[in-house]
Image 1 (cartoon, one colour):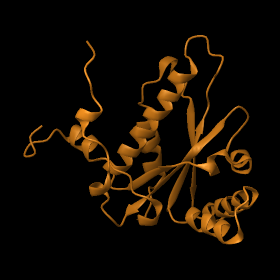
Image 2 (cartoon, rainbow, N blue to C red; image 1 turned 90 degrees about the horizontal axis):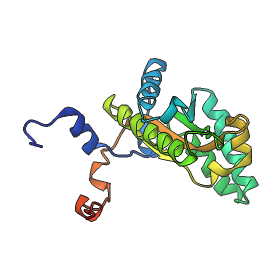
Image 3 (cartoon, rainbow, N blue to C red; image 1 turned 180 degrees about the vertical axis):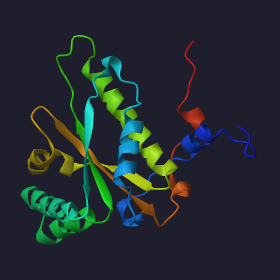
Length: 192
């Protein structure tokens, strides 16, 4: 690919990077833009069109309620008061947070669970790339909070699993230089 005449789609893929919540400010995506991001996620490969995922957007006043839940979950996990307050503050950083929810059908006769998880991963990649294409910064976050029964019950319905959150907003810092990924020739090998 020539730097003078890059393919715009390939350029966007090669330029994609994460921007953490502490570097995100208002404005976040509008409702119409969130629908567009979701539409991009729905373009991921999906055997039998199961759509083994969904998102729940948290913005505006709902951010305060989510922050309270993050603090409660931290205390329930044994964190001290200071650490729990930090979890609360982190929940308020991003203008928009999307809860990422898996809906894996473990008994599907055609599509094994690993294919459904692959679909969810593709959906996340599409959504993150689309957010960046719209000028937003975003980052997928998971960790112990995603396994919190309190948070799972707040965001999920029966048979669903909380995977994590995507923080989205206007970036205040260019994070491209810090990707820390190995060169492609360390990841690609040729089988013969």
